[in-house]
Length: 154
Image (cartoon, rainbow, N blue to C red):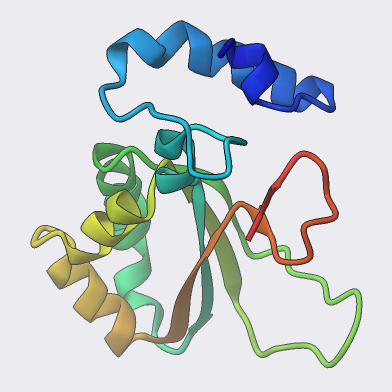
């Protein structure tokens, strides 16, 4: 069975993903077609994730050292910041009492969890928790409704 016939390609995004997967398949030992024949198993198991940090600072003494070094740990675990901003504007609904929001991207959930669980992060985490009310949430890059063609159905 030819790869192109096994994977329905309906838009440019999937064509690019298909080309990228085809080019890297020789290096990926886990690449086997999923049971539904639509996406390689390695793509389904390695779904990109985003960590959204919603932080209300209550004591800013921790912020300078945290801000100066936490991004290095994010990078160590394969992540990167998409934004870390205090320019928060509510477009709909009641505004949350938020000082800043950070959005980080990681190649896999395991890498995001490794960042949060890194022993080097523990003192920074303790300082942030002591000086803020914060919440870290993780989402993947899927579409729960399955109607957006460039996202996997989640």
